[in-house]
Length: 106
Image (cartoon, rainbow, N blue to C red; front, side):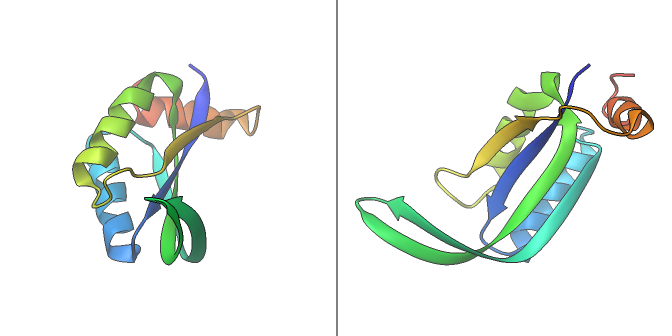
């Protein structure tokens, strides 16, 4: 099962932790890193906005993408949350096996 990372932004640390715990409780991801202090610039409703946000980087498997998106949307305060996925090209085989095991895909 190919491992992937989910890149998710949240309005603050509290929301990021809540989303991360929700993903972990349902075993949709094996691990979540929360990175504070990101500054975002983006287009929203016809104008450029700027905001402080947190980043979640979650490790999971490709077959969980749709379920991860649905759960994040359920828990997120944004109307259109950033949820994107990147494939993992490689890495520590033991770690990649652990991701599969913790998401029920070993």
